[in-house]
Length: 218
Image (cartoon, rainbow, N blue to C red; front, side):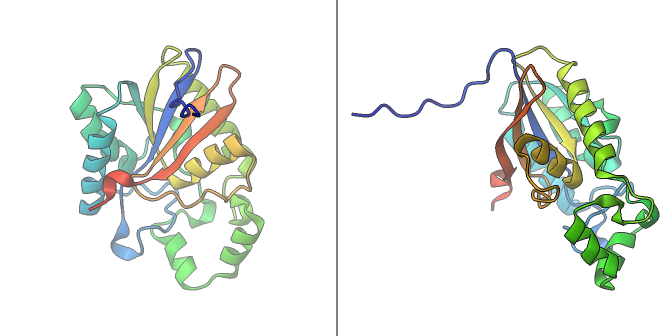
């Protein structure tokens, strides 16, 4: 008789980071899943409900700390968990969304999508954010994401589990660094989804789960 596989155990010298995408925000002018860049939209009522459900899920974990990007939609999504746990979220600037350069104006990106701007097709083909004039380069995003993960890891003891609230473009970059995938292969994380990673002592990232939305069912 074969023995069942043992559940994953966090190595004592590694850190588990549960990356949570913010809840639905700024959706009155377009679909929920359109990219928003660094526009500082607040959560919509749907996003507030999603944040509460994510908090219910994460409150079951023994979290050593909570981190957020500087943007309002992540801080508001983290608020219910902070209230449940009594933790004071730590703002990590490197967790902010990708900057869209000349397309950072309110609802500019969804408007370009609706108008079928040729640069949208080129953006998807090239998988480079700087296809958009003035936008961040993939190399810049990769460097600041790596620095943000190192900052988080330096904030807690090894063997800890933490929650970090961030954005779709950053989740995609984290998964790319973990798996060596194409840059946009993981650019579909849904609102209030959880992406589970382990950061080993040498800084390498392991991806254990992506776009988990089980807590949003029903």
